[in-house]
Length: 412
Image: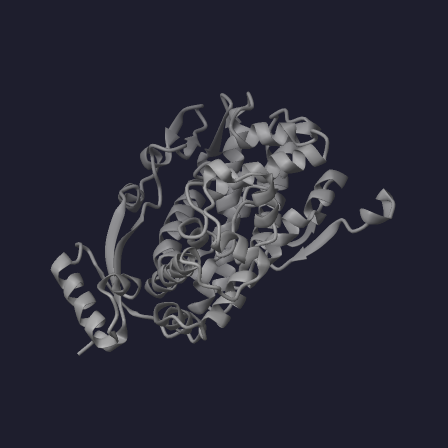
């Protein structure tokens, strides 16, 4: 197939933004690559569809949407006199397109169980470097911007900051698919108000209310969606299932799973041995492998794995309690002992069913790449200082809550 026929389709229809244009042959070829196509099979919101039935959108949707917003941002900044070359424009769009390519099946749950010591950002970089080799160095500039090594700081801020195209897309998209209207933000207005001053991304003062709404929406989405109490249970339960499967695999038990998934179950994957072969195997692993295996694990001859797999498959989750203060160790130990006796299992195995932890939310962090407002007199202020909305200052403080999960059978 020649280049002309392989690169015919240049427009996608998106439910959030309408028609999205794929701006170049290189970007089209990257989207068509199997590494990127895998993102169609990786959920954007992990287990959230168990709470919000519409939240079945994927990392693929999000990456394309973020690229679209980046196109808009480049157009706006150019219109205000910021010089951005065609090479820089394409590179910054490639960088945002590929920013999540290293997310594994069910994203964060996989990072805490099957693969250890390496983050999805580091895996994303490995994918980018592999693609750069395949595309004969055409991603050099995109990688430099992604890593924050390029001389023009504001380009990196468009990809990774507290008001980047990643956040502007996922808040709007996750709000739309979950049906949680409180997360809806006016990304168009925020992008229209963007400016560059002293090589830093700033927002014109007219955009202050849109930025305030963005910060408040972020707080609401975290407590209502990303850290929803049932979502916390589901995510931790998934981690427990994967940890138990890994433990059984280590002991030599044969578990039903795809060959790709078995590679990660039966091998210790860490940063130091995450080689090219492991990257190729990772590129084959997606949500389908994990869900398919969990369905089969319902029937394995192990009480812990079978019970946990049933809970996920049938959405029969443990009970969760949330508190402003940590739960007492004595109470947790008491529950573990009670569960051990009722199930006749070893005490250490109770930890798979009864677990505690903490969740925290900081809608705005003034110490990390702060959002800066540009005033007509040329003055630049942090959004906290610029805003007359008292909530914004309050939202810059980290709020931590504590949880404990336990089987419903323990409720007297």
